[in-house]
Image 1 (cartoon, rainbow, N blue to C red):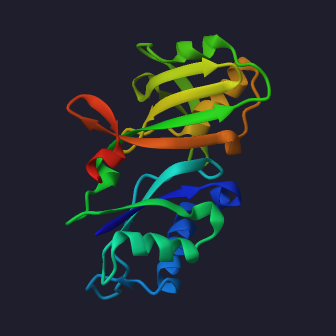
Image 2: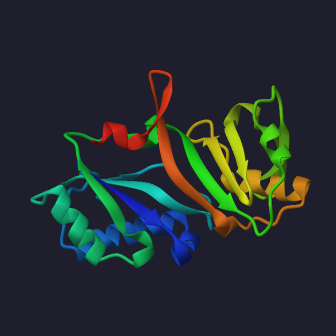
Image 3: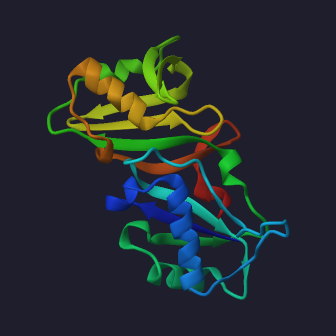
Length: 215
């Protein structure tokens, strides 16, 4: 099992998760990688991804696990990048005996976003509350969601915002929170200004970069 850490930046950030998976898998075909397939009625590539970022949000830390043979992690990294668009190139590769199932282990993500003007420090007060309800869209409908337990922290530094948000079964979309911040604090942060910088797992009560279990 080889796991690739790859980008999703620039125009590629507007490609849906379903189509992103197709691009990744077609890249493996172009790279002539011997990928294993399922044995069911409709065989499919044995590849795995983590929780996707919302459409338009960029990322420096996406993971793509591949069950393959006849190739080592360094060669796969090289051949994969030769077959992929620049905005989806891999930046690291890791080899594990079996699938680490990052999709189940990742519990939070770090994000950063920038604005054309200095941001209010009051935005930081969203974190650390017992309850904090925002309006979000779900399946085309507006729903109220209490995000208090889903926001680990928010830090403001000039025109930059840093956030750690829940990911996985308990999930808070970064674009939903930024939309709320824009409305409540008069900001103009665009979806494409949001970047996921890390995916995190809980190691004995300490949040650690997902790469700690891949090295």
